[in-house]
Image (cartoon, rainbow, N blue to C red; front, top):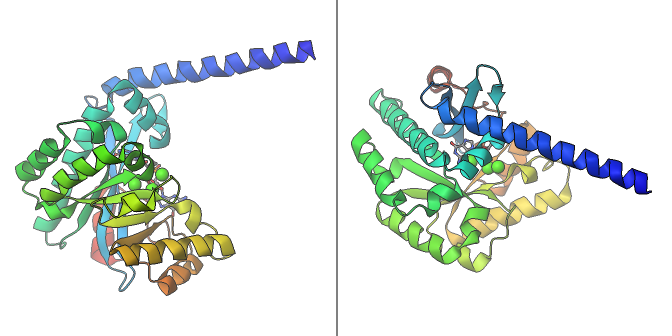
Amino acid sequence: AKQEGRQCYRFFTQEMQARSARNLQLVNALHHALERDQLQVYYQPQVAMQNGHVIGAEALLRWQHPELGMVSPAEFIPVAEGSGLILSIGEWVLRSAVRQAKTWIDEGFGPLIMAVNLSAVQFRHPDLPELITRILDEEGLPHEYLELELTEGVAMHNPQGVIAVMNNLHERGVRMSIDDFGTGYSSLSYLKKFKVYKLKIDQSFVRDISTDPEDKAIVSAIISLAKGLGLKTIAEGVETAGQLAFLREQGCDEMQGYLFSKPVPIEQFEALLKQGF
Ligand code: C2E
Ligand code: CA
Ligand code: CA
Ligand code: CA
């Protein structure tokens, strides 16, 4: 048993070393990602349940590194947050997405709501509201076309502080939504104090919605909660016609998922806008 324990320990530290070596490699590489043009914003359509029209886009960051290949944001966003790089990267994403939304409006694609993910580090930064209004005004995008996606975890970490920032952004005309809703520990009493516009139903509940009675119950409860509070709902991770049918029946307002499109580069998104799905 002693022998086994030691092996187990050795395995554990090796794995930890490998992980921190990879983290170090990612931090170093990420430092140059912006200036070396390795970052790109992809866009995934958000679709109205009523008529299937594309009414918005979520901006999702992509990192293509010459040696490491395509690194998933699920892996590099936490690294960017830990190193503080998320502030400059996040600002670049905001700027790119806002500029793109303005271009699409100018090109006659109609008003599209541009949804941008915000990390906790960005949200806690005291200059955030000023930064956002500056970007919107410099790019000439009306404030109500930007929607900031904030995860439930971020919102509940320091609800009082979050309420103050939300009020500030709300006064500036910027919309906010709660991402991954249902996965955190939202106190429902806070939900009514948060100046949010929309709840994004997490994809983990949507996945088995056609077959799992518990997931059905959770999703339909979230939708009726949102309705009661006057909030819109969007379901993420919609991949099948069966999921779509259930969501429609429950009165979910919008959808996003591979059933319509994966996140795609600008040109492909424009093709979707022109031709539909
Ligand atoms: P998220 O904000 O919850 O984004 C949704 C994720 O689900 C995206 O993964 C998207 O590509 C994926 N997805 C969309 N539809 C489907 C579907 O039908 N099926 C499945 N299985 N997946 C679907 P992605 O692009 O890899 O991003 C992962 C996470 O990285 C995001 O989760 C978000 O938390 C973070 N992230 C991405 N871009 C940014 C960014 O610019 N800033 C910040 N702070 N975080 C970002
Ligand atoms: Ca999101
Ligand atoms: Ca999400
Ligand atoms: Ca997520």
